[in-house]
Length: 92
Image (cartoon, rainbow, N blue to C red; front, side, top):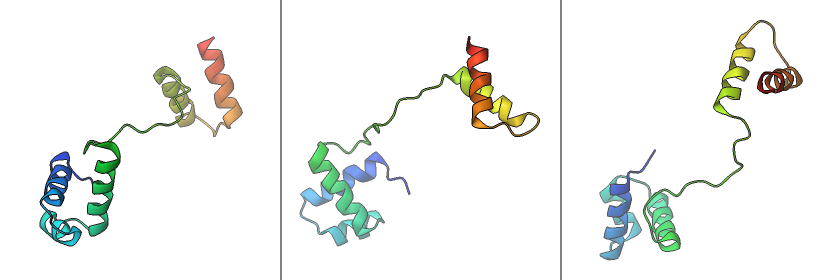
């Protein structure tokens, strides 16, 4: 379940007013663990916004992705080497 920014802000507001985690959860219609998670995140980051996830950067372009999908949907069942070879030849 995705919690809206407004609901996250409400959780923080109610916490600031002194309500218990259980009271906040009941008032907002979420679990106590959700209330605890968003309060902890707020104190850690100072925000109720969802932060962008870090991770490995993309290594293919949208064009290469489209070529891979086209190849995969074609005849036969290409293996990873065939897909890679095809993509490299098409981008050369």
